[in-house]
Image (cartoon, rainbow, N blue to C red; front, side, top):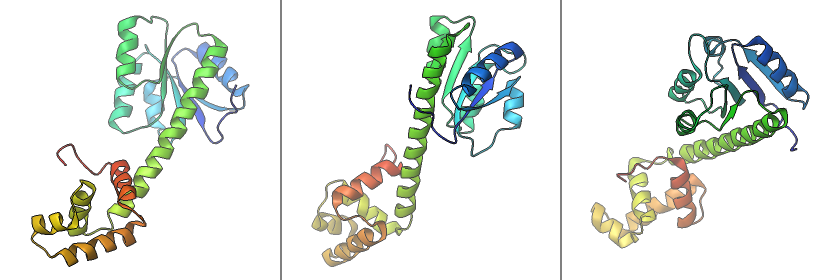
Length: 210
Protein backbone atom coordinates (compact mmCIF):
# COMPACT_ATOMS: atom_id res chain seq x y z
CA UNK A 1 0.00 0.00 0.00
CA UNK A 2 1.23 3.51 -0.76
CA UNK A 3 2.37 5.72 2.08
CA UNK A 4 -0.32 8.14 3.27
CA UNK A 5 -0.08 11.68 1.95
CA UNK A 6 0.81 13.99 4.82
CA UNK A 7 -1.54 16.76 5.97
CA UNK A 8 -4.57 15.09 4.40
CA UNK A 9 -7.59 14.14 6.48
CA UNK A 10 -10.30 11.60 5.82
CA UNK A 11 -13.74 13.02 6.63
CA UNK A 12 -16.42 10.47 7.47
CA UNK A 13 -20.11 11.38 7.44
CA UNK A 14 -22.44 8.60 8.61
CA UNK A 15 -25.43 8.62 10.98
CA UNK A 16 -24.52 5.18 12.36
CA UNK A 17 -22.21 5.58 15.37
CA UNK A 18 -20.93 2.00 15.10
CA UNK A 19 -19.92 2.57 11.47
CA UNK A 20 -18.18 5.82 12.38
CA UNK A 21 -16.23 4.14 15.16
CA UNK A 22 -15.13 1.11 13.12
CA UNK A 23 -14.14 3.02 10.00
CA UNK A 24 -12.34 5.81 11.85
CA UNK A 25 -10.33 3.20 13.77
CA UNK A 26 -9.46 1.47 10.51
CA UNK A 27 -8.37 4.74 8.88
CA UNK A 28 -6.18 5.69 11.83
CA UNK A 29 -4.35 2.33 11.77
CA UNK A 30 -2.56 3.46 8.60
CA UNK A 31 -1.51 6.80 10.06
CA UNK A 32 -4.23 8.98 8.57
CA UNK A 33 -6.28 11.56 10.43
CA UNK A 34 -10.01 10.86 10.48
CA UNK A 35 -12.77 13.27 11.50
CA UNK A 36 -16.28 11.94 11.91
CA UNK A 37 -19.69 13.62 11.65
CA UNK A 38 -23.15 12.19 12.47
CA UNK A 39 -24.89 14.14 9.73
CA UNK A 40 -24.38 16.14 6.54
CA UNK A 41 -25.52 19.24 8.39
CA UNK A 42 -22.84 18.78 11.05
CA UNK A 43 -20.18 18.40 8.36
CA UNK A 44 -21.29 21.56 6.55
CA UNK A 45 -21.33 23.50 9.83
CA UNK A 46 -17.61 22.85 10.25
CA UNK A 47 -16.63 23.09 6.59
CA UNK A 48 -13.44 25.05 6.02
CA UNK A 49 -12.59 26.69 2.70
CA UNK A 50 -9.07 25.23 2.97
CA UNK A 51 -10.27 21.68 3.66
CA UNK A 52 -7.91 18.97 2.35
CA UNK A 53 -8.27 15.22 2.00
CA UNK A 54 -11.21 13.06 0.97
CA UNK A 55 -14.77 12.35 2.10
CA UNK A 56 -16.39 9.02 2.97
CA UNK A 57 -20.12 9.66 2.74
CA UNK A 58 -23.13 7.55 3.69
CA UNK A 59 -25.83 7.59 1.04
CA UNK A 60 -28.95 7.47 3.22
CA UNK A 61 -29.08 9.55 6.40
CA UNK A 62 -31.63 11.40 8.47
CA UNK A 63 -31.98 14.96 7.22
CA UNK A 64 -29.78 15.81 4.26
CA UNK A 65 -28.88 12.74 2.19
CA UNK A 66 -25.46 11.92 0.83
CA UNK A 67 -26.55 12.96 -2.67
CA UNK A 68 -27.82 16.29 -1.38
CA UNK A 69 -24.56 16.93 0.46
CA UNK A 70 -22.60 16.11 -2.67
CA UNK A 71 -24.69 18.57 -4.68
CA UNK A 72 -24.12 21.26 -2.05
CA UNK A 73 -20.36 20.66 -2.09
CA UNK A 74 -20.34 20.85 -5.88
CA UNK A 75 -22.13 24.21 -5.72
CA UNK A 76 -19.54 25.48 -3.23
CA UNK A 77 -16.68 24.35 -5.46
CA UNK A 78 -15.38 21.92 -2.84
CA UNK A 79 -12.70 19.67 -4.35
CA UNK A 80 -12.89 16.79 -1.86
CA UNK A 81 -13.00 13.44 -3.70
CA UNK A 82 -16.00 11.54 -2.35
CA UNK A 83 -16.34 7.83 -1.64
CA UNK A 84 -20.00 6.87 -1.21
CA UNK A 85 -21.04 4.08 1.15
CA UNK A 86 -24.47 2.51 0.87
CA UNK A 87 -26.23 -0.60 2.12
CA UNK A 88 -28.51 -0.37 -0.91
CA UNK A 89 -26.12 -0.12 -3.84
CA UNK A 90 -27.51 -0.71 -7.32
CA UNK A 91 -26.46 0.24 -10.82
CA UNK A 92 -28.68 3.37 -11.22
CA UNK A 93 -27.58 4.72 -7.83
CA UNK A 94 -23.92 4.07 -8.59
CA UNK A 95 -24.18 5.72 -12.00
CA UNK A 96 -25.91 8.76 -10.51
CA UNK A 97 -23.17 9.15 -7.89
CA UNK A 98 -20.34 8.82 -10.40
CA UNK A 99 -21.95 11.26 -12.83
CA UNK A 100 -22.22 13.79 -10.01
CA UNK A 101 -18.47 13.51 -9.48
CA UNK A 102 -18.03 10.77 -6.85
CA UNK A 103 -14.58 9.20 -6.81
CA UNK A 104 -15.95 5.79 -5.79
CA UNK A 105 -19.02 3.89 -4.63
CA UNK A 106 -18.83 0.99 -2.15
CA UNK A 107 -21.53 -1.11 -0.52
CA UNK A 108 -21.89 -1.91 3.17
CA UNK A 109 -20.55 -3.86 4.89
CA UNK A 110 -17.37 -2.65 3.24
CA UNK A 111 -14.17 -4.69 3.09
CA UNK A 112 -11.52 -2.90 5.17
CA UNK A 113 -8.60 -3.50 2.81
CA UNK A 114 -10.68 -2.38 -0.17
CA UNK A 115 -11.78 0.79 1.61
CA UNK A 116 -8.20 1.69 2.58
CA UNK A 117 -7.09 1.15 -1.02
CA UNK A 118 -9.86 3.43 -2.32
CA UNK A 119 -9.06 6.05 0.34
CA UNK A 120 -5.43 6.15 -0.81
CA UNK A 121 -6.60 6.57 -4.40
CA UNK A 122 -8.96 9.37 -3.37
CA UNK A 123 -6.18 11.16 -1.48
CA UNK A 124 -3.90 10.86 -4.51
CA UNK A 125 -6.70 12.36 -6.62
CA UNK A 126 -7.11 15.20 -4.12
CA UNK A 127 -3.38 15.91 -4.31
CA UNK A 128 -3.47 15.94 -8.13
CA UNK A 129 -6.44 18.33 -8.10
CA UNK A 130 -4.62 20.74 -5.79
CA UNK A 131 -1.55 20.62 -8.00
CA UNK A 132 -3.66 21.38 -11.07
CA UNK A 133 -5.37 24.23 -9.22
CA UNK A 134 -2.00 25.76 -8.28
CA UNK A 135 -0.82 25.55 -11.88
CA UNK A 136 -4.06 27.17 -13.10
CA UNK A 137 -3.89 29.96 -10.54
CA UNK A 138 -0.24 30.68 -11.38
CA UNK A 139 -1.07 30.83 -15.09
CA UNK A 140 -3.97 33.18 -14.44
CA UNK A 141 -1.83 35.53 -12.37
CA UNK A 142 0.65 35.83 -15.21
CA UNK A 143 -1.99 36.39 -17.88
CA UNK A 144 -3.97 38.85 -15.81
CA UNK A 145 -0.86 41.08 -15.72
CA UNK A 146 -1.34 41.68 -19.45
CA UNK A 147 -3.19 44.66 -20.84
CA UNK A 148 -6.37 44.09 -22.83
CA UNK A 149 -4.48 44.67 -26.09
CA UNK A 150 -1.66 42.33 -25.11
CA UNK A 151 -4.13 39.58 -24.26
CA UNK A 152 -5.90 40.12 -27.58
CA UNK A 153 -2.61 39.76 -29.45
CA UNK A 154 -1.72 36.70 -27.38
CA UNK A 155 -4.92 34.94 -28.43
CA UNK A 156 -4.37 35.75 -32.08
CA UNK A 157 -0.71 34.67 -32.00
CA UNK A 158 -1.44 31.39 -30.24
CA UNK A 159 -4.28 30.88 -32.71
CA UNK A 160 -1.71 30.71 -35.50
CA UNK A 161 -1.70 34.24 -36.93
CA UNK A 162 1.56 35.90 -37.93
CA UNK A 163 2.56 39.37 -36.77
CA UNK A 164 1.61 40.79 -40.16
CA UNK A 165 -1.83 39.18 -40.01
CA UNK A 166 -2.37 40.42 -36.46
CA UNK A 167 -1.33 43.96 -37.43
CA UNK A 168 -3.72 43.94 -40.36
CA UNK A 169 -6.65 42.57 -38.30
CA UNK A 170 -6.17 45.05 -35.46
CA UNK A 171 -5.29 48.02 -37.65
CA UNK A 172 -1.91 48.62 -35.99
CA UNK A 173 1.66 48.58 -37.25
CA UNK A 174 3.82 45.48 -37.53
CA UNK A 175 6.33 47.09 -35.14
CA UNK A 176 3.61 47.69 -32.54
CA UNK A 177 2.69 44.02 -32.64
CA UNK A 178 6.35 43.09 -32.11
CA UNK A 179 6.59 45.40 -29.09
CA UNK A 180 3.42 43.96 -27.57
CA UNK A 181 4.67 40.41 -28.06
CA UNK A 182 7.94 41.34 -26.40
CA UNK A 183 6.02 42.71 -23.41
CA UNK A 184 3.90 39.55 -23.28
CA UNK A 185 6.98 37.35 -23.04
CA UNK A 186 8.52 39.59 -20.40
CA UNK A 187 5.40 39.69 -18.21
CA UNK A 188 4.62 35.97 -18.40
CA UNK A 189 8.17 34.66 -18.27
CA UNK A 190 7.49 32.52 -21.34
CA UNK A 191 10.25 31.99 -23.88
CA UNK A 192 8.26 30.72 -26.85
CA UNK A 193 4.86 30.71 -28.51
CA UNK A 194 4.44 27.10 -27.42
CA UNK A 195 4.89 28.08 -23.75
CA UNK A 196 2.38 30.88 -24.19
CA UNK A 197 -0.11 28.43 -25.71
CA UNK A 198 0.34 26.09 -22.75
CA UNK A 199 -0.08 28.95 -20.30
CA UNK A 200 -3.30 30.03 -21.97
CA UNK A 201 -4.62 26.48 -22.07
CA UNK A 202 -4.09 25.67 -18.39
CA UNK A 203 -5.36 29.06 -17.19
CA UNK A 204 -8.94 28.28 -18.18
CA UNK A 205 -9.41 31.89 -19.30
CA UNK A 206 -10.49 31.01 -22.81
CA UNK A 207 -14.14 30.14 -23.42
CA UNK A 208 -15.48 27.84 -26.13
CA UNK A 209 -16.37 30.94 -28.13
CA UNK A 210 -12.68 31.93 -28.16
